[in-house]
Amino acid sequence: MIKSAMKPRGVVPTLTLVIFLLVGCGKEISQMSGWNYNDPKNGGFEVTPYLGQETGPGLILVQGGTFMMGRVEQDVLYDWNNIPRRATVSSFYMDETEVANVHYREYLYWIRRVFELDYPAVYRKALPDTLVWRSKLAYNEPYVELYLRHPAYQWYPVVGVSWKQAVDFCAWRTDRVNEYILIREGLLDMNPNQAADDNFNTDAYLAGQYEGLVIVDMPDLDPNKDTRKVRIEDGIFLPRYRLPTEAEWEFASLGLIGNTYFERVTERRVYPWNGHYVRNDHSKYLGSMMANFKRGRGDNMGVAGRLNDNADVTAPVYAYWPNDYGLYNMAGNVCEWVMDVYRPLSAEDNDDFRAFRGNVFKTQVRDEEGAIAEKDSLGRIIWREVADADHKDENLHRRNYKKADNISYLDGDKTSSLYFQEESLEPDELKKMMYEITGEQPTTMIDDRARVYKGASWRDRAYWMGPGTRRFLDEEQSTNWLGFRCAMVRVGSPVGF
Image (cartoon, rainbow, N blue to C red; front, side, top):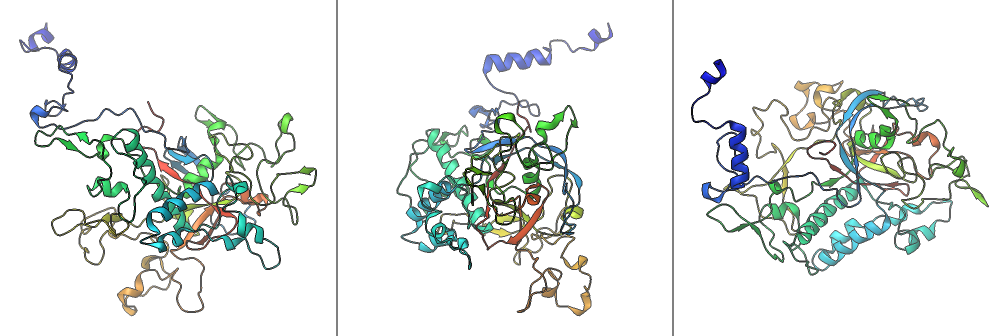
């Protein structure tokens, strides 16, 4: 009686009204304003139905979660740079294998075709350093001449690539994949004659600074316009390819999804497989090595007729067995670059959710009218550091950060420097006292260019195959035992719907 008396007369129940409008008119209704979405009659605000993120080429979904990050074996070097701590990693995508020579040669071919005529330095900058194979007391010249380009090695991991070159590869891959998506969807035609700044760049396209061979644009529901370019809101473009963070790489390498029973990890791992040994215990492959590593001094591959890992240096990227995520060679073959800047105390300082050190916040350069500035001569949108010298006050009232460069936050900035004395130093000398290399005799190997690499390589002992081990190298250097693989953020639900 009371409920019946309180119901207003002549009002259709809300759920029935929504169903009637959705079925009868085919329009989704705003819960805030009551106006139709996707209706040009009322202005055409668009809301795109989205089923989930497309898996990019070469990627595998790594479902995130909590895990014990850090050292799982005795710290034989007594570095104490990766003490165990619990952390959470969001779901993300990672390459099934390391980037192979054939993949990198595809990149080089594109760079040469597009830029060599006008900007040959771009191609030279991208070339791997094949001389990393040379050794003063070993005959490695065949690798110098053949490893990158000979078809026998095309599915072997690329080496001689610096951290900076790996980052550039990720950016190129982002643009090529998103360009292909537009072609696949019938919006853009292939353009094999791209040159100089007339090449597809995702940021430039979104800023309206790339035309290309357009077949058809998206219909625009704005009554004042007919067509438009694809926008982020359409969910067509994939997020950026990038290097994985140290936490992501370590989580993916462990592959604990195979050892999870409800919310309990039934067995902790030393390597990306179960057990405390490096040989396969399956009857069919009994005794076979699980990864490509160096068993001992002078033993890279075992005895003739019974090679223990079937590889003297690197092995094909699909060699050996994948871990429980389906990722190959997460223990051996080549070490792999990650995004992080190295600090010995990252374990103590980093957040326990999506841990990462290396943030330098940037924003797109804009002109005096607020529009995104014109792209550069290579077809790329120009980025600048947030709150640079010309924009000192733009973060004045922020609580989460005050400056762009946060690499040395809590470990290397002026407040964490033992001998910091504000009154005795000039402002320019206060930036990174602890890890700054100055003069001809540097006092430290660690600075803001020191990048973390993870895992073991063909020339490492089994100790380094543990996912918790970590080492570092200058971002502009490269070796014959260091490669990389790409990652991508997972947007929306961590598991899908």
